[in-house]
Length: 344
Image (cartoon, rainbow, N blue to C red; front, side, top):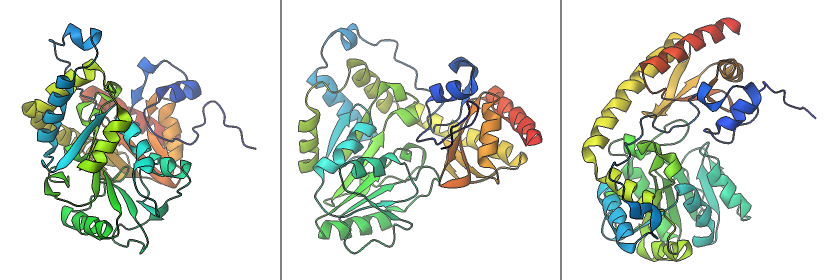
């Protein structure tokens, strides 16, 4: 049996856990530049007027209604659809196997690994689809991350609607994880939905840079969202999450300015990576997917310099990097890449 050395990077189920990096390579979390996630490094500024009641009182129904109204407007959710808020999309996707009908499950792959895990855990091992355009004849549940993580691949709305209508005719559902749709104008299917059997997951924390707030949404047919609401029950969201989420989702000016900034900074990151031999071939304005021959070796060399990236067991030539978050941090990455390339 192979035992990983302290400075040897092992399998990564997801990014963002710096304790793994610290345990293997040393230092403290403050020493590290964490590029392993697709979370916006520029978080939404916490409202100065956060009320005392947000912390001291049980969350009020009126506060949740304000949050849902703000999310409906921000995500352009049609009135015909239901919308549910939860403490993060992770809990929502883990509930889907208990809510959706029996039958074969297919997942467009490779993608965010938790989707497969939650279904396999319930004994419904999904079929992996290399192309969403070739649905198995018996598939009733199809899961697609759009834009996809980690490659940023985007399926157009017209094609998604055709797939949704096919599955609806079978009594099935299309599940769309739109975790990164905030940064791709026109990517979301939500404004185009009517009576199709489609469930759409929307992450709050990634675009607004507040992953620790734990807030996410699911939109879909009202019968399904009503069942989900009953499972979540009262007070599933904290008072601060309700107030901060409502303020951020209403702040269209911040959202527009941030989208422009992210596009500009991703262009800078792409250029820096290409100058050090990493060809960017996928991603979104929140993360870049680069190809290189020895991704694991570079990942470890950067980790020795306290920079944490994301590599993939199933694709040994892939490396995903989030935005550094400023010119100084981008320069730190560039210098580390130059040193690491010489070392390798």
